[in-house]
Image (cartoon, rainbow, N blue to C red):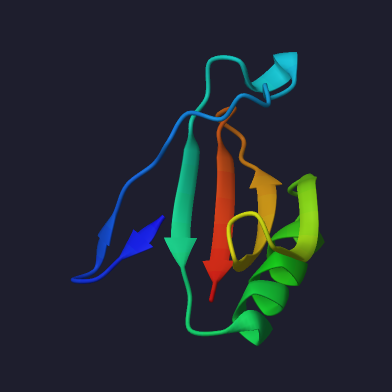
Length: 81
């Protein structure tokens, strides 16, 4: 959750990550807008990184985001308001 003052905090999700990512973490990066989320997602998947979640808007978190598996077993989350 992005808060005033550029502070971000995370809550544990009740939705488990698949077993492949059981030891990894989610690394979230806020970007300027939805076009940047889509551009970076396309760039990273074009370089061979596997998609975890294609760009989409979630009403639950009120954010537009995409998720990509990184080579170390983490998930990179790109988020825009």
